[in-house]
Image (cartoon, rainbow, N blue to C red):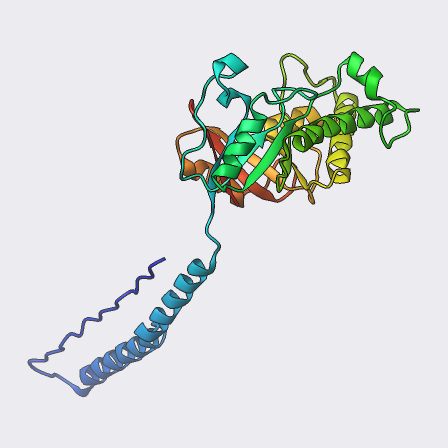
Length: 294
């Protein structure tokens, strides 16, 4: 950042006296001039020198240069699949992408992105660092019945059953990773509303149950050896979890649909929906999802 210096100028006026009528008038004039001189001296003492200004500017430039540069990438999933595979045929990342986040699921847990193999292969072929994300959802009655006792929590409580179901969601996602030999540096848990399999929204009790599912999913990823974080946005996180605060869990935040990269970049310096540190920020348009690491 450039630093401008302020230049101070002072006007000096001449006091001319045509005729002096008495010594008193001379005395008044001398006092006025002396007071003016003192004022100038005091103001000048408070003006920083050019050398000091240059040093401050150099320090600011050095600090800016030492900040790590951000990387830019895209997130992709089943919408990038061809129509024949159930996708929309949206484009894969451009050659300039510095990283990619690949979806493991097809909209809901216990499903798989039909292009996971080819998309993980694209990242490997292009030597682009890759992360992953998996959708979370409240279990259906059939899923809860199947998985309520298959996990690390006692099935004697509803909370334990839901956490075990969330654990199973994580196990399904990691099974997909193992099948294709994909080892992402991070797996994000995508927490957002669903039309087909909605999260309960009946107040505090429902939000607590939703937390139990997400707690199970986080533990499942941890037990499988994957670092994890959460993706959401403020209104969604509030409605689903009651603004659950997880200060130690990384956040992938979204600016929504916008063509302004600065909208996403600004999220890196804002408080997140869950209180966790923002590590990725997203924006999207009709063609691609764009991401920046924070």
